[in-house]
Length: 327
Image 1 (tube, rainbow, N blue to C red):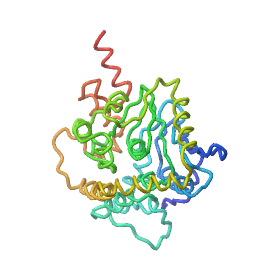
Image 2 (image 1 turned 60 degrees about the vertical axis):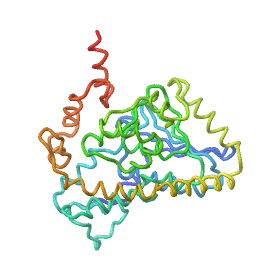
Image 3 (image 1 turned 120 degrees about the horizontal axis):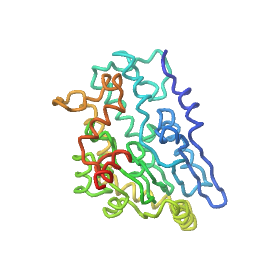
Image 4 (image 1 turned 180 degrees about the horizontal axis):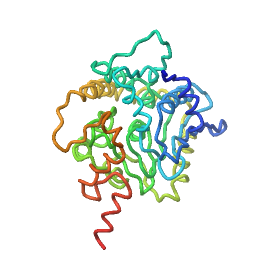
Protein backbone atom coordinates (compact mmCIF):
# COMPACT_ATOMS: atom_id res chain seq x y z
CA UNK A 1 0.00 0.00 0.00
CA UNK A 2 1.46 3.42 -0.99
CA UNK A 3 2.76 5.59 1.83
CA UNK A 4 0.83 8.86 2.07
CA UNK A 5 2.67 12.00 3.14
CA UNK A 6 -0.37 13.53 4.82
CA UNK A 7 -0.67 10.47 7.08
CA UNK A 8 3.02 10.64 7.99
CA UNK A 9 2.81 14.33 8.84
CA UNK A 10 -0.34 13.89 10.91
CA UNK A 11 1.28 11.09 12.90
CA UNK A 12 4.45 13.16 13.35
CA UNK A 13 2.64 16.03 15.08
CA UNK A 14 2.47 14.08 18.33
CA UNK A 15 6.27 14.03 18.44
CA UNK A 16 6.82 17.75 17.86
CA UNK A 17 5.76 20.53 20.18
CA UNK A 18 5.61 24.11 18.96
CA UNK A 19 4.69 27.00 21.20
CA UNK A 20 5.45 30.69 21.30
CA UNK A 21 5.57 33.55 23.78
CA UNK A 22 4.13 36.50 21.80
CA UNK A 23 5.23 39.02 24.43
CA UNK A 24 8.85 37.86 24.44
CA UNK A 25 8.62 36.97 20.70
CA UNK A 26 10.36 33.66 21.36
CA UNK A 27 9.09 30.37 19.90
CA UNK A 28 10.11 26.88 20.98
CA UNK A 29 10.19 23.81 18.74
CA UNK A 30 10.77 20.62 20.72
CA UNK A 31 11.35 17.10 19.39
CA UNK A 32 9.40 14.90 21.78
CA UNK A 33 10.26 11.31 20.92
CA UNK A 34 12.73 10.43 23.68
CA UNK A 35 11.99 6.69 23.56
CA UNK A 36 13.55 6.73 20.08
CA UNK A 37 16.31 9.20 21.06
CA UNK A 38 14.31 11.85 19.14
CA UNK A 39 15.06 10.19 15.80
CA UNK A 40 13.03 12.01 13.13
CA UNK A 41 10.64 10.25 10.79
CA UNK A 42 9.88 11.51 7.28
CA UNK A 43 6.71 13.07 8.63
CA UNK A 44 8.59 14.84 11.41
CA UNK A 45 11.12 16.23 8.95
CA UNK A 46 8.41 17.52 6.62
CA UNK A 47 6.47 18.99 9.54
CA UNK A 48 9.69 20.64 10.74
CA UNK A 49 10.02 22.39 7.37
CA UNK A 50 6.44 23.59 7.64
CA UNK A 51 6.89 24.90 11.19
CA UNK A 52 10.03 26.79 10.18
CA UNK A 53 8.09 28.31 7.27
CA UNK A 54 5.27 29.42 9.61
CA UNK A 55 7.66 30.89 12.17
CA UNK A 56 9.42 32.76 9.39
CA UNK A 57 6.17 34.55 8.50
CA UNK A 58 4.77 34.97 12.03
CA UNK A 59 5.24 38.57 13.18
CA UNK A 60 5.06 37.44 16.81
CA UNK A 61 8.26 35.41 16.44
CA UNK A 62 11.74 36.92 16.44
CA UNK A 63 13.71 34.02 17.94
CA UNK A 64 13.20 30.28 17.48
CA UNK A 65 14.72 27.82 19.96
CA UNK A 66 15.04 24.22 18.71
CA UNK A 67 15.57 21.52 21.32
CA UNK A 68 14.90 17.89 22.25
CA UNK A 69 12.97 16.29 25.08
CA UNK A 70 14.88 13.83 27.25
CA UNK A 71 18.60 13.11 27.35
CA UNK A 72 19.45 13.84 23.72
CA UNK A 73 18.89 16.45 21.05
CA UNK A 74 18.56 13.62 18.54
CA UNK A 75 20.24 10.81 16.63
CA UNK A 76 19.19 11.74 13.09
CA UNK A 77 16.73 9.95 10.83
CA UNK A 78 14.67 6.93 11.85
CA UNK A 79 16.51 3.97 10.27
CA UNK A 80 13.69 1.54 10.98
CA UNK A 81 11.37 3.68 8.91
CA UNK A 82 13.90 3.88 6.10
CA UNK A 83 13.85 0.10 5.98
CA UNK A 84 10.45 0.30 4.29
CA UNK A 85 12.02 1.92 1.24
CA UNK A 86 14.22 -1.17 0.75
CA UNK A 87 11.72 -3.85 1.75
CA UNK A 88 9.35 -2.95 -1.07
CA UNK A 89 11.83 -4.11 -3.73
CA UNK A 90 12.72 -2.37 -6.98
CA UNK A 91 9.34 -0.65 -7.20
CA UNK A 92 9.80 1.20 -3.91
CA UNK A 93 8.51 4.75 -4.26
CA UNK A 94 9.75 7.83 -2.42
CA UNK A 95 6.89 10.09 -3.54
CA UNK A 96 5.81 10.59 0.07
CA UNK A 97 9.10 12.44 0.67
CA UNK A 98 7.90 15.04 -1.85
CA UNK A 99 4.36 15.13 -0.39
CA UNK A 100 2.98 13.69 -3.63
CA UNK A 101 0.09 11.32 -3.05
CA UNK A 102 -1.09 11.18 -6.65
CA UNK A 103 -1.08 7.54 -7.91
CA UNK A 104 -0.72 8.86 -11.45
CA UNK A 105 2.82 10.05 -10.66
CA UNK A 106 5.53 7.38 -10.99
CA UNK A 107 8.79 7.68 -9.07
CA UNK A 108 12.06 6.65 -10.81
CA UNK A 109 13.13 3.03 -10.33
CA UNK A 110 15.82 2.07 -7.82
CA UNK A 111 18.36 1.39 -10.56
CA UNK A 112 17.99 4.98 -11.79
CA UNK A 113 20.43 7.75 -10.89
CA UNK A 114 17.39 9.87 -10.09
CA UNK A 115 16.12 7.46 -7.44
CA UNK A 116 18.57 8.83 -4.88
CA UNK A 117 19.54 12.08 -6.57
CA UNK A 118 15.96 13.34 -6.74
CA UNK A 119 15.56 12.87 -3.00
CA UNK A 120 18.95 14.35 -2.09
CA UNK A 121 18.31 17.32 -4.35
CA UNK A 122 15.01 17.77 -2.52
CA UNK A 123 16.98 17.84 0.73
CA UNK A 124 18.79 20.92 -0.57
CA UNK A 125 15.46 22.79 -0.67
CA UNK A 126 13.95 24.39 2.42
CA UNK A 127 10.71 22.42 2.01
CA UNK A 128 12.59 19.13 2.25
CA UNK A 129 13.08 19.71 5.97
CA UNK A 130 16.87 19.41 5.95
CA UNK A 131 18.03 22.86 4.88
CA UNK A 132 15.07 24.87 6.22
CA UNK A 133 17.06 27.05 8.63
CA UNK A 134 19.27 28.40 5.84
CA UNK A 135 16.34 30.44 4.51
CA UNK A 136 14.94 31.39 7.93
CA UNK A 137 14.91 35.17 8.34
CA UNK A 138 14.59 35.09 12.14
CA UNK A 139 17.19 34.10 14.75
CA UNK A 140 17.52 30.34 15.29
CA UNK A 141 19.12 28.81 18.38
CA UNK A 142 19.77 25.09 18.84
CA UNK A 143 19.95 23.72 22.37
CA UNK A 144 22.32 20.76 21.97
CA UNK A 145 22.76 17.92 24.44
CA UNK A 146 23.62 14.23 24.46
CA UNK A 147 23.65 12.80 20.95
CA UNK A 148 23.62 15.42 18.18
CA UNK A 149 23.95 13.12 15.20
CA UNK A 150 22.85 12.92 11.58
CA UNK A 151 19.89 15.14 10.73
CA UNK A 152 20.13 16.86 14.10
CA UNK A 153 23.75 17.68 13.29
CA UNK A 154 22.42 19.37 10.11
CA UNK A 155 20.34 21.70 12.26
CA UNK A 156 23.31 22.50 14.51
CA UNK A 157 25.28 23.49 11.42
CA UNK A 158 22.50 25.60 9.92
CA UNK A 159 21.37 27.40 13.10
CA UNK A 160 22.55 30.92 13.87
CA UNK A 161 23.63 30.03 17.41
CA UNK A 162 24.27 26.75 19.23
CA UNK A 163 24.25 26.45 23.02
CA UNK A 164 25.48 23.06 24.22
CA UNK A 165 25.79 20.94 27.33
CA UNK A 166 29.22 19.59 28.23
CA UNK A 167 28.18 16.00 27.52
CA UNK A 168 27.06 16.58 23.92
CA UNK A 169 28.53 14.57 21.03
CA UNK A 170 28.43 15.75 17.42
CA UNK A 171 28.84 13.86 14.17
CA UNK A 172 27.20 11.71 11.53
CA UNK A 173 27.21 7.87 11.58
CA UNK A 174 26.87 7.96 7.77
CA UNK A 175 30.51 9.07 7.51
CA UNK A 176 31.34 5.46 8.41
CA UNK A 177 28.71 3.53 6.45
CA UNK A 178 28.19 5.81 3.43
CA UNK A 179 30.85 8.53 3.43
CA UNK A 180 28.93 11.81 3.37
CA UNK A 181 25.82 13.73 4.38
CA UNK A 182 23.71 16.59 2.94
CA UNK A 183 25.43 19.44 4.80
CA UNK A 184 29.11 18.86 3.92
CA UNK A 185 29.67 22.49 2.91
CA UNK A 186 28.08 23.84 6.08
CA UNK A 187 30.14 21.65 8.37
CA UNK A 188 33.36 22.48 6.53
CA UNK A 189 32.59 26.19 6.89
CA UNK A 190 31.42 26.13 10.52
CA UNK A 191 34.03 23.69 11.87
CA UNK A 192 36.94 24.65 9.66
CA UNK A 193 38.32 22.47 6.89
CA UNK A 194 41.05 20.74 8.91
CA UNK A 195 38.86 19.62 11.82
CA UNK A 196 35.91 18.65 9.63
CA UNK A 197 38.26 16.59 7.46
CA UNK A 198 39.22 14.70 10.61
CA UNK A 199 35.57 14.00 11.44
CA UNK A 200 34.76 13.01 7.85
CA UNK A 201 37.69 10.65 7.29
CA UNK A 202 37.77 9.00 10.75
CA UNK A 203 34.01 9.05 11.25
CA UNK A 204 34.56 9.81 14.93
CA UNK A 205 32.20 12.08 16.88
CA UNK A 206 33.52 15.28 18.43
CA UNK A 207 32.88 16.33 22.02
CA UNK A 208 31.34 19.66 22.96
CA UNK A 209 34.74 20.87 24.11
CA UNK A 210 36.27 20.07 20.72
CA UNK A 211 33.40 21.73 18.86
CA UNK A 212 33.77 24.86 20.99
CA UNK A 213 37.49 25.00 20.27
CA UNK A 214 36.84 25.00 16.51
CA UNK A 215 34.20 27.76 16.92
CA UNK A 216 31.20 25.58 16.04
CA UNK A 217 29.52 26.26 19.41
CA UNK A 218 28.70 29.60 21.04
CA UNK A 219 28.55 28.36 24.63
CA UNK A 220 29.14 25.13 26.56
CA UNK A 221 27.72 24.68 30.05
CA UNK A 222 26.94 21.85 32.52
CA UNK A 223 23.73 19.99 31.69
CA UNK A 224 21.84 21.47 34.65
CA UNK A 225 22.60 25.00 33.39
CA UNK A 226 21.66 24.36 29.74
CA UNK A 227 18.09 25.66 29.73
CA UNK A 228 19.12 28.74 31.68
CA UNK A 229 21.96 29.47 29.25
CA UNK A 230 19.72 28.98 26.22
CA UNK A 231 17.12 31.31 27.68
CA UNK A 232 19.81 33.92 28.31
CA UNK A 233 20.79 33.89 24.64
CA UNK A 234 17.19 33.80 23.40
CA UNK A 235 16.13 36.68 25.65
CA UNK A 236 19.09 38.84 24.65
CA UNK A 237 18.33 38.24 20.96
CA UNK A 238 14.64 38.98 21.45
CA UNK A 239 15.46 42.31 23.11
CA UNK A 240 17.86 43.38 20.40
CA UNK A 241 16.83 45.04 17.14
CA UNK A 242 13.31 44.90 15.60
CA UNK A 243 12.25 41.95 13.44
CA UNK A 244 12.65 44.05 10.28
CA UNK A 245 16.25 44.72 11.23
CA UNK A 246 16.82 41.02 11.94
CA UNK A 247 15.45 40.18 8.49
CA UNK A 248 17.91 42.63 6.92
CA UNK A 249 20.78 41.16 8.97
CA UNK A 250 19.83 37.61 8.00
CA UNK A 251 19.57 38.62 4.33
CA UNK A 252 23.11 39.98 4.50
CA UNK A 253 24.35 36.73 6.07
CA UNK A 254 22.46 34.63 3.51
CA UNK A 255 24.00 36.55 0.61
CA UNK A 256 27.41 36.16 2.25
CA UNK A 257 26.91 32.39 2.53
CA UNK A 258 25.77 32.16 -1.08
CA UNK A 259 28.85 34.11 -2.11
CA UNK A 260 30.82 31.45 -0.25
CA UNK A 261 28.88 28.72 -2.05
CA UNK A 262 26.33 27.36 0.45
CA UNK A 263 23.63 26.34 -2.03
CA UNK A 264 26.26 25.16 -4.50
CA UNK A 265 27.60 22.92 -1.73
CA UNK A 266 24.11 21.52 -1.10
CA UNK A 267 23.58 20.72 -4.78
CA UNK A 268 27.04 19.24 -5.14
CA UNK A 269 26.52 16.98 -2.14
CA UNK A 270 23.20 15.80 -3.63
CA UNK A 271 25.07 14.68 -6.73
CA UNK A 272 27.77 12.97 -4.66
CA UNK A 273 25.16 11.15 -2.57
CA UNK A 274 23.45 9.88 -5.74
CA UNK A 275 26.72 8.20 -6.78
CA UNK A 276 26.81 6.07 -3.64
CA UNK A 277 25.27 2.91 -5.26
CA UNK A 278 28.09 2.98 -7.83
CA UNK A 279 30.87 2.96 -5.22
CA UNK A 280 32.90 -0.28 -5.19
CA UNK A 281 32.88 -1.86 -1.74
CA UNK A 282 35.86 -3.57 -0.15
CA UNK A 283 36.05 -6.68 2.08
CA UNK A 284 34.80 -5.88 5.57
CA UNK A 285 33.14 -2.65 4.44
CA UNK A 286 29.59 -2.04 5.65
CA UNK A 287 27.53 -2.03 2.46
CA UNK A 288 24.52 -0.10 3.65
CA UNK A 289 21.39 -1.34 1.89
CA UNK A 290 18.62 -3.91 1.93
CA UNK A 291 20.83 -6.73 3.21
CA UNK A 292 21.97 -4.68 6.18
CA UNK A 293 18.40 -3.83 7.12
CA UNK A 294 17.34 -7.47 6.90
CA UNK A 295 20.22 -8.62 9.10
CA UNK A 296 19.64 -5.84 11.62
CA UNK A 297 21.08 -2.39 11.07
CA UNK A 298 21.83 -1.78 14.76
CA UNK A 299 23.94 -4.93 15.00
CA UNK A 300 25.73 -4.11 11.73
CA UNK A 301 26.61 -0.60 12.90
CA UNK A 302 27.76 -1.89 16.31
CA UNK A 303 30.10 -4.40 14.65
CA UNK A 304 31.73 -1.54 12.73
CA UNK A 305 31.95 0.54 15.90
CA UNK A 306 33.94 -2.14 17.69
CA UNK A 307 36.73 -1.70 15.17
CA UNK A 308 37.40 1.81 16.48
CA UNK A 309 39.08 2.95 19.70
CA UNK A 310 36.49 3.36 22.51
CA UNK A 311 36.96 7.14 22.64
CA UNK A 312 36.11 7.35 18.92
CA UNK A 313 32.86 5.38 19.11
CA UNK A 314 29.43 6.93 18.58
CA UNK A 315 27.47 5.39 21.46
CA UNK A 316 27.91 6.16 25.12
CA UNK A 317 28.03 2.45 25.94
CA UNK A 318 30.79 1.95 23.36
CA UNK A 319 32.74 4.91 24.65
CA UNK A 320 32.45 3.55 28.19
CA UNK A 321 34.88 0.83 27.10
CA UNK A 322 37.64 3.44 27.47
CA UNK A 323 36.94 3.71 31.20
CA UNK A 324 36.71 -0.07 31.58
CA UNK A 325 40.12 -0.54 29.97
CA UNK A 326 41.62 1.93 32.42
CA UNK A 327 40.53 -0.04 35.48
